Image (cartoon, rainbow, N blue to C red; front, side, top):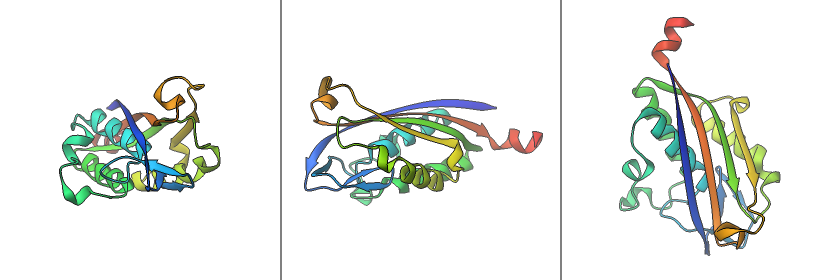
Length: 165
């Protein structure tokens, strides 16, 4: 059995913070506002995985009101969700995602993001797609107010895989 999940996240820029996307720190004059490291891509992936498995959303499992998540690297969220999926009898099959940012330029960092996300989710790099685009200066992202990300995941039942494979 397979399921598909969709995740979307948006964070505003914030001064005096590191910009972390896909587990990679990107040189930029601002980071993103958030309780954890505000990794917009990882958050979108977390929501996609949780949604596909019917396990709620990021706010339910990693609430901003919980001090243990303050400043936490969001790759830890991915690792924890991978464990949650395994307990529920699921594993990630593939991931397709897009970072939506007018700045900074993401292309140089995409290979490192793919590697970091794949490792956190115990997937092959070939099963992870991370792309980037702009909004051609339209909307809040186009005005350089923040960064958005979207992710679609396919998860597979581990029971079905062991029965057929």
